[in-house]
Image (cartoon, rainbow, N blue to C red; front, side, top):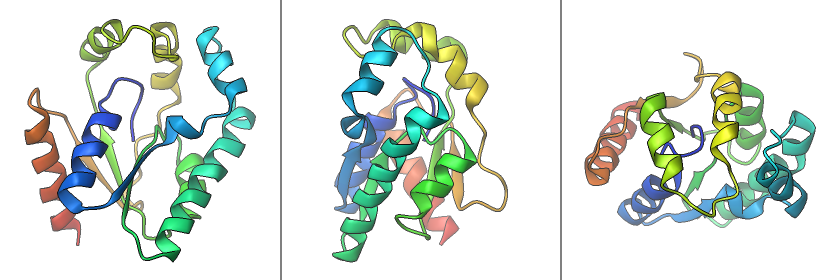
Length: 161
C-alpha cells in the first residue's frame, strides 16, 4: 500500500516471486471511468473507489478460497479502504511503502503515459491514513535498491508472524 509512485507494483511483483504467490496490480481492476477521471487530473472520491475496492476484495477472496497466496499492489490509502480489502482475507497484512515527497515527485516525473498524473499526488498524500497499531501492517521505507526493499519486507513479515 502507499501513494502513487511509492513502488507498489515493482515491490509486489518481486515479493510475489519470492513467496511464489499470485500477484495483482489493483490498478488493473479500475473501471475505465476511474481511469478517465484520473487522466483528467480529477481525484477519485470514496464513491468512485468503492466498487473498485470491492472487486479487489473479491479477487483476493477467490484466490484465498483456492488456497492461493496473494500479493496485491493497491493504494489502500484509508483504513476504510483496507477494511474492504480485509473482507477478501481477514488475515491480510498491509505493507506500507513510505516514500519521501521529493522522491515521489521524481518517480512520477519518470512515468510518462501513466494515468495517474503528478497533480494528484498531493491529494493522495492528504488522503493517506497510515495503518493504526491495531491493523496487521508493516512500515517500510524503500531502499534505492529494490531487492533490499523486498528483503526488508520479507524480514518484517516474518517477524510479524
